[in-house]
Image (tube, rainbow, N blue to C red; front, side):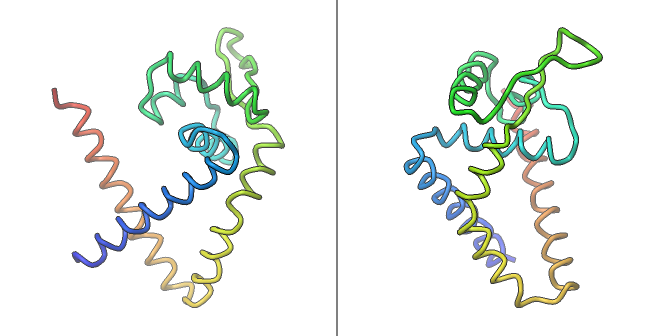
Length: 150
């Protein structure tokens, strides 16, 4: 069990290192790249995402989200639009550039992942996905617990 935990931590650290390298290469804040991923994922799932939603997802204050959104807009990664049913609510919409840039910048990592995963059967991949999802859920639970402590 310890080896799995260590492997997950090593993977997390390596992914963070890759994001930092992308950040250095592009001149974008690493937190902005994370925000782009959150907005993109919501769009892919058809889930509306507002500034408050983004702030909760990233654990950021409204002021920090506002500054981040200004940078993301200037970089051409997000547009703010009014919600059709509630004109007061502003939704975040990733641009085509967001999908192109993130696909291009993260392609080396995703290609490497694909090459590794090709060695496993669908059943094995289902198990890996289940374990990773359960570990993610456990981490989210631990994060919520931290939020309830003084």
